[in-house]
Length: 453
Image (cartoon, rainbow, N blue to C red; front, side, top):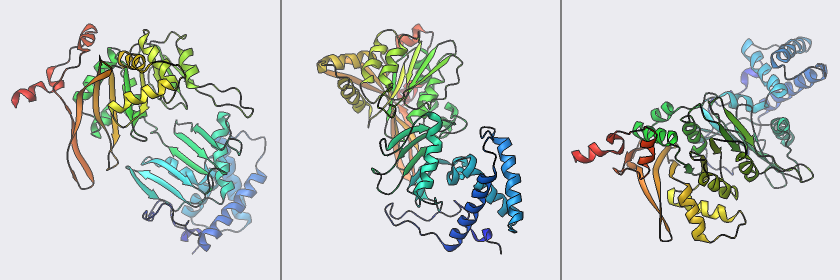
């Protein structure tokens, strides 16, 4: 039996999660031997490759690597089956052209998140559940090479002077890297994958994240230029929902998107994408989200879509919503619709403007029309749990009214049972929808069901 036949296939049977802090799985002698073989072949390939070869020509370079790979195997008299030879070649090619051990995880459409906790501990998220894989890196330096390969094309760096970095993959997947000295267990890499085919509203309905009635209502709101904030916790699907809501924007409008790392995948033709930039090695050249929001106002936008507000840019976003840029969209981290307003107030204060609290609340109440809150349920599914109208001020309090709320009916077979239901209340901005020629049927708001009761 050849050496590679005894190798375990990655992701075939990941061990159960017992303790995320447990000791790393020690490499077996077979794994060490196979790693040495792969490293030896890889080193020979790198030494024999033409340094002038354009690595961006992936198909051409892959053919060259394959020819050299076959030559190396023959010269060393290494006998492998066809499956073993192909697997070894893919691993070597991934090290030279791709992202090394992460390549099979990135190509697996069922995986939504990849978490590298040092060289010997790699976890994934699949269907909302964490799994530990048996994929390992050679050492810390191997993880660092993969991190550099991801962030270098974006002109960013991750070193001791700046040990944290945000980046993105070519497909839009979000990447975060943290390295020593602040990461004590070795380089940490977190990749939140995005589907190669963006999710559509039909997909969300099929996944029971939203109901057809709520889709009809939100589509009408976007068409009628209602200012919306998508809220939710980390990993609740805010960016995906923002993508779906943005798809309702008419193709005749000019859209300016502003993000820390470009993730939105709008399908309209007239889209201008702006991305923030961190400071360089000298601490200069930073372009913050707030700078981009202010600049976007001079770009004749019909809509401004901000990937996420998390600081003083919230004030500029509210002012844009209040000064003729209706129909703008953004996301914010929060635990619920009411908490979203508190978060917006706090972020406006972070802008450094000495504004009284009542003035801030009046700005929020005047700018934001609708809050769409999404939660990650205990079974791993993402669902919209509230669609809430911001109605205005009464005294010093912002008045809100739920239009749709999630009603949980049970929990069976590790799945949350429930449905997003209308409250039977029509929003106050219905007149704005009708001015745009949109007339929603009473069934959207559950009137017929109320009458039947």
